Amino acid sequence: MRRKDREVTDFSKMIEMMKSCDCCRLGLVDGNEAYIVPMNFGYDIMNEQIVLYFHCASEGRKMDLLPRQSVVSFEMDTKHKLAEGNLGCEFSYLYQCIMGTGTLEIVSDTKEKIDGLRKIMDHYTNQTQWEFSEKVVDRTKVLKLSVRTWSCKEH
Image (cartoon, rainbow, N blue to C red; front, side, top):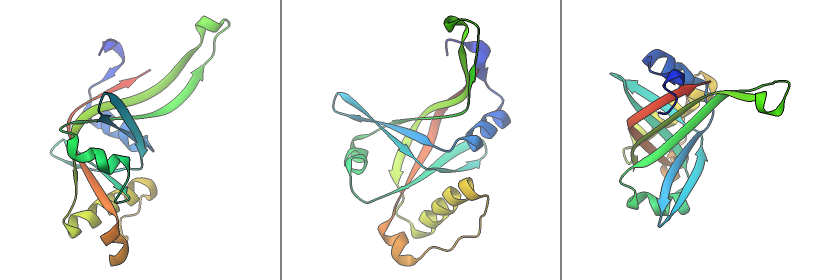
């Protein structure tokens, strides 16, 4: 990270930043092109190991690319605010952002799929007691990103 003065390394603060994000962008490689897709997400933390969960349809470009990805990138950002100045070059933009890499896999175990869907719902609603119809769970794909590396920055 170039601006070490803006780096956030306190794990608790990093998690608080992640909790305030409402979108996670996945970065996949498609030949010689980047493919970035915004996703709703949920998360789980065990022994400072982060797992992100996403839900999606069974088909589409993301699902076509998934088997060819050994590592994926992700990005989240929040707390956007314009810092005004008197001149154009005195303006700045305040934010918090998270970037990282990990391995992405399709969750096949029904119990883990439901757990991942609950994590997603909990992230957006702060409620953990959700029921899901078997039919919906069967047709919904749940993706699990096991985070390998991540960094946070604040300005």
